Image 1 (spheres, rainbow, N blue to C red):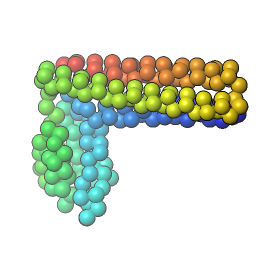
Image 2: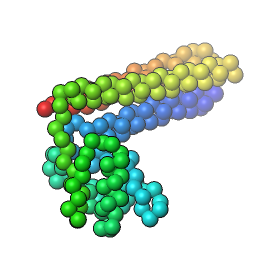
Image 3: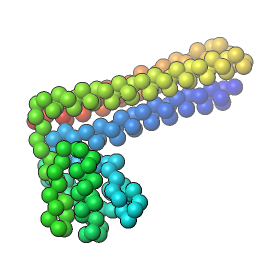
Amino acid sequence: MEEEMDLVIEMAKEKMENAIKYLSDELAKLRAGKASPHMLDGLTVDYYGAVTPLDRVSNINTPDARTILVQPWEKNMLEPIEKAILQANLGFNPINNGEVLRIVVPALTEERRKVLVKQVKGEGENARVSIRNARREANDELKKLQKEGLPEDLEKSAQQEVQKLTDSFNGKVEEILERKEKEIMTV
């Protein structure tokens, strides 16, 4: 019974860690005025009839704080990559010089910064919901275990441990959100 209880707690922790990882990945895609290769994460391109992630057909780097450089491994991929970036509607206008695509990241306006902060808060709330769901599922499993013979005091201590995990992960969400908001609002 105690092994099953530990397993329930471990599963809850894993789900909460996944929520934090997902939040971090989503926030990395939001641009904060500073160029980052992550801004193009999730972008796919038609590579000889196969939908392929952009980072698998090109090298993406940031030579300076305002520029993203996309260097395809094959020159004939320049146009499909340019088309994919334009279709993704990221607000970027790539410059094709025949060798590489240069993307100049425009400075953020105050209004755009506020919209991004709202987006950040929305992503944070999604992460908190995932964490609460993991807590609820763990507590439900612990109650089932109690009905199957787990002593009540062990069930209560396990629920307290799950609550500590929940509080800890919610704290991590707050830290991540504060950092991202600061990054966005810094001119």
